[in-house]
Image (cartoon, helix red, strand yellow):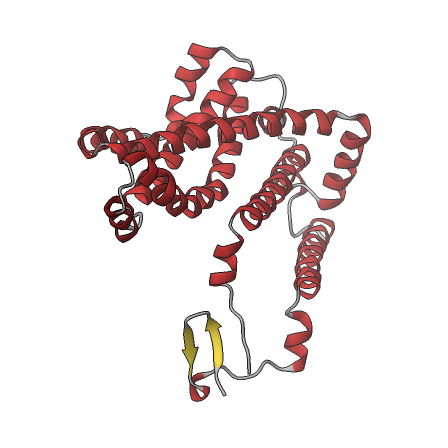
Length: 286
């Protein structure tokens, strides 16, 4: 009797984990975990609201869940929240797509020349060490206060991450497979497309999870500095007026947006790299 955790890994019976209790196994499902998570969220907001009503928490400094949900409902009905959310979402996705594609292509291109890679590596490190938020005033000055500046700021955040990830993954590509292809007469381009690109895909797609958050950060920061639309704009305007309920509406909307985008990336990864999930997933057979 053995327990198989991976395709090539076995664990002796004496080292296997104890069986889960029936009660734990009941909740260790997608619906069970979602139920517990929902209960945790409800308990958090209930404790918050109770604290405000009994005077333990300042409504002025923190806001109240009842006020937040009421305001969110009114903003949804009027279409204001949808408009601001759509604007920020479009900026973030556009910056994410452009930055990730450009950065990944540049990082992969560095594989072709070790000399060029070593030449530009110090500049990449220097650019990466600069907080991109510090570039926001310059980007606003160059591109104005419209959509382009917000997208440019999101691109500046996402491109460098994608570049470094793709370049590192290309350097770590399977050298044995590359040598085999070369011994069979493959050209450098064929080695690149047959060995390097497939090896780097998991690392590139893994950066999607990071870059989608950076895309949102770039869009929101740009809206903080200069904008008339977007979630960043309503958060900044409300905070200057000490309207905490509106601030929380914007923040919670950003959280929900990030949560949804994260799982969209997860779906993309499952569709493009099913072999990766099957090889790393834990399968137990007794």
